Amino acid sequence: MKRLTLLCLQVLVAVGLIAIWHFGATVKIPAGWMSAKAFYPLDPFFFSTPFAVFERTWRDFATGVIWYHLGITLLETVLAFVIGAVGGVLVGFWFARQHLVAAVFDPYVKMANALPRVVLAPIFALWLGLGIWSKVALGVTLVFFIVFFNVYQGVKEVSPTVLNNARMLGMSERQLLRHVYWPSALSWMFSSLHTAVGFALVGAVVGEYLGSAAGLGYRIHQAEGVFDVTGVFSGMLVLAIFVIIIDTVVTVIENRLMVWRPTASAHQR
Image (cartoon, rainbow, N blue to C red):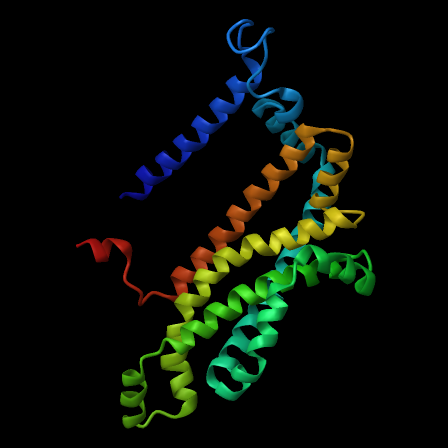
């Protein structure tokens, strides 16, 4: 499928959903059909309207109100993403190459991954304060395990036949790491990074929501406290837009680093 066609279909889906939202929040169902009085299928008090959300978002950017809060959230997201991803890659490689270490720490890794992050948020706030680092720590706990498990599995998936052939050709362990293990783990790693981007932002926003004086999560929490549904949806819209932007950057880097990987069109020929 051509990229332009795919983009048109994606835009069409978005337009359709916005149209349903708009008509559901602005067109009343007449009385006597489903209710004794006329009503909105999507009550604007609970759902706002698309144009109100877009207008609020535009106004926040035009007046500059949102830039400071957006900068705080993006800083927390990027730090959590980078620290968690680098840590996940390093520990994933280490565990995959050191079988004894993996066997010893396996139950503890699973226990740590099972901890509910919402419970960890107030603990990080107690340890690190209400600044950015408690939100970064929460985001790291989300990103780390996603990347770790994928890298670990990617290294473990290397074919023993390929390893034996490489050793027969005289490759050292460093060369194996660079030319065999790393390419195998790379596709797994980038698959996890697309998911990790969203979770890094989730960690930052949840941390801000539970305790902060700045950030998009803080703004959403403030809007929710005064039943400002338009403000809540506006904050969610901004978050969604910037997740797409960050994910696009990850995709560009992935395509640059993995030029050897066959494209979807090549598979279809």
